[in-house]
Structure formats: C-alpha cells, structure tokens
Length: 576
Image (cartoon, rainbow, N blue to C red; front, side, top):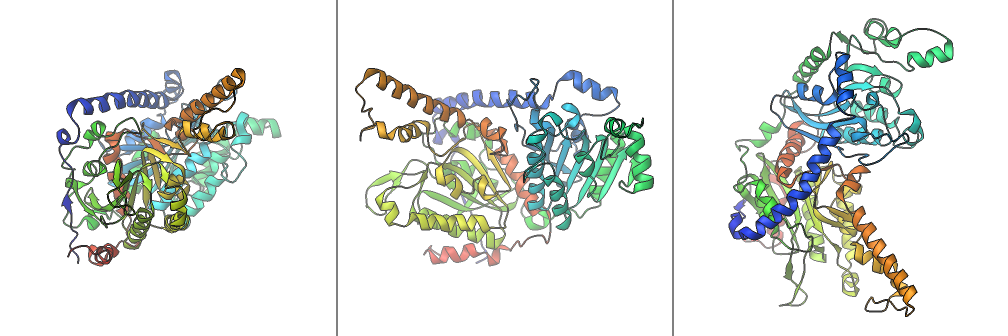
C-alpha cells in the first residue's frame, strides 16, 4: 500500500512535434516572451537612472539592490505582482512601476521568505492605488505558507494626490496592519529593516514585526516634519522626531540601530538564520531533487500559441515532475481530466491538468467529443482527487487550459450544476497549499472550478499565452447581439446602414474582449499574481512546493503509507 506506483511519462520532443512545428511554436512564443522581458525590465528600472542616482547620493541602496544583497548568493528570486498598475497613468502624467513596491519569494539562509520592499526610486516608496492590495496579497501568501516575512521599509506614506483610491475600503492601506497582526497571531516570523522615510502608514508597517532595525538616517513618524511645521509651527526634522535615537533608546518601537544599509541587511540575514531550518529535507526522505528527464525548456516547442490547437497534456507534466515519473490517479474515468502525483524537487505534489483534443464519449460508444471541457465524470474525479490531496497534506497544482463546463440539455440532466458545486465547495474549503497556472485558456466557470484566483490559491501564475475571460470575443459578440441575429448567427436586418452598424458593433465588442484577455490586463489589476516564461514554470514550482513543506507542524503532511490516494485506486477498480 505504501508503494507509490510512479511510471515514466512523456516522449522526446522529436516524437511529440516535428521540427518545423516545434520551431513555429517557439518562434511565436519568443515574440510574446520578448515583450514580457522588455516590460519587466521597464518595471525594474523604476523611475529611471536619475532616481537611482538620487538614492545612491544619499548613501542608500535601491530596493532591488537590497534584495540582491539579502538573499543567498546565486539563489533565484520569484517576484509577484511585477505588473500591478502597468500602463496606468495617474494625474500629472505619473506612473507607478510595480505599484512602487517589490514583493518576492526569496531564499535567505536556506529558508524561503516573502520579502516586501518599498521601491525608493518611485516617489520615495510611496503607496499608490493598488499598492496596499499588492502588499496584502504578498502577506497572505506568507501567511498561507507560514514562511518568514521580511520588510525592507523606505516609504514616504500614501501618494496623497490619489489617497481616495488607496486609503479607504476593505483592502485599503490600513488592512496591511491587520495582515501584520494576523501573521503575528499565527506565529509567522516578521522582521523589518527601516532604511529611510517611514511616514504615517509606512511608520506603522514595521512596528508589529518581531525585530525592527533602523539605519542612522532612518526615521519612523506618524507625521513628518513638514506636516508638524504647518500644524504646530515647530521647526524640527523628521530625524529629530522619530529617528533611531528616539525609537531605539526611548520609545522602544525599534530594537537595534545600525550604521548603514549593508549592516542592516547582514543583521536581517542573522535573524532569519536563528529560525528553525526548513523541513523540506525531512519530507524528501531519501529522495533527491532530480530534474525532469525531458528539459522544461522543451515546453516552448510543445504548447501552441493558437488556443484552438491541441497538444498532449502528459508531455507538459513530463517536463515538470522529477525524472518525468508520475502516478496518474483514476485514469479509467473522466478522460478529459488528468490528475495524479509526482515529485517536484523531491517533494510529493499533486497535479490536475486539462487534456486537449478529442476524447471518447462514454454515453455514445465510438463517438468522440472535445476535451478542455468539464464533463460529469471529470468533475467528480478531480473533486475526489482534490479532497484526497487536502486530506493527505499534498500541495496541489492546477494547470488550466479550459474552455468551461459542458452545456446543453444533456449536461443539465446529468446535474453538472451540482457536480460543479461539489468541486467548488472542495476547493473553497481545502487548507492544503494550492497553486494555479493558467497555461492558455481560463474560461467561464471552468476557471473558477479549477481553483482560479477567486478560490484563493496561494499563487496564481499566468503565461504569455493566458486568456482569462468568461468567453471568447466572437462568442461574446454573438451573445451581446443575439436579438439581432437569426438561428445561424447571421444579421437579420436588411437595411444596409443598420447592418453596417451591427457589424461594426460586433467587431468592436470582439476586439475589446480580445484586448481584455491580454494577461497584462489581468496582472495590472491584480487578477493574476505574475506572468512567467513557460520554460520558467518548473523553477517556480520547485520554489512554491518547497515553501509548502518548509514549516513543520503548521499543517498535516501524511506519509505515503496512509494516503487516501491508495483507497481511490482500489475503489475505481485499478489492478493491484
């Protein structure tokens, strides 16, 4: 029973796609990912070289320089929320790259941490519209995974011209401090370094942390010198009001004063080193972290950029799991869905992915029907699998390429609404870490059912091929103009002017929906956490899965001898 029946999956790329087809896929994807790289570089530049120089003249480092010196040398950094506010222009023709804050999974002293750093090259690290939501989202990721949270604070408070969009509301700036409190209440370590400005809300942000360090030019104040001068006619500097002399030696709001950025970063590393080490090695047991037998970079030649083209989902899994070994659970039912268990970085991980192309129809022997759609048996299968992963403590990865639920009289008669409700209930109440990847299509209620962002996966990733929408542009245009079309979706009107108006309206709707499906639109408004290169997916999963196993005692992780998976295998009649 303890034996996990892993079997090799996948084929060499030459068998999956001929050289011409693979090159076409790579070329089309490369153009999209070049745009991603260019935009990421644009965000990383902040407000540009002149603002970097201003920071350096003050004897300080930029946020990304601090992050680079904080992490373990050579270790990867996985940023989230890079494209929040991307392309949005605020009054005065101002922009806020990354919403003025850097949030990233980073390894410090061998432990995965969430690092939240104000970008001091963008309005002195001010909080813009959506900055609070981005910070709170990162804090929630840390809370769900119980990983240490490190704040690199250099914040001039709210960007006041836009205060009405970031101060009030259920997820306004004040909710950051509630998240600080929840992290503390759940025992998640928080350490803070204050490097400079720390005004108003920025002053509250580090206070609930377990350890607070300040450099000699840092200060924490409820109100800065300019405001006090106006309100009380007092001439005094912000450093006099709330510098390290005040908060380390008198108020106790900070613990230690240090001379400069580099010293503070070394102190933060020392604090993280004092924490319990990662539990990942224990949960690996004697298994090593082994790369897939087929290189993850080959995914660029497998996934078509045209969402209407099919591919073999097993080939995707073969390039994500260790040694390309996988245990497919319940393959006999719900052919449109593939679910099972493999290792990622030596750690057990559950996977659910949509099969593509045509599959058999169990209701009509010999007939075929399209996959990438949720039918009754597939819904029941992944509901049971999701519950089993939750019961067994196995992190669960949802790889979406879905057009939605089956529709029509037969679907309703089969009770798809009820089966879908069961799946939604399962994913809504799971406590195990779940991660969602939008490979290509993420459409309609299928996006919800497969643990889309509204169902609280710890992280949702998009690729450059992701298309997040209720339905495709052409379909939606037909639905919007349905009363003006016949049963064959042809325009009923005979008047040329009216026909032209309807045609133009339908075209405008279709084009607008297509624009809205751009993953950068979702990333801009926090409807997805990050856009990543397809070849980088394996590295992301390694980090997220290891972070899931890092803490010990914060969640139930069962050993494979008592997995519910084994029971499912017997119950569906699999051979012994």
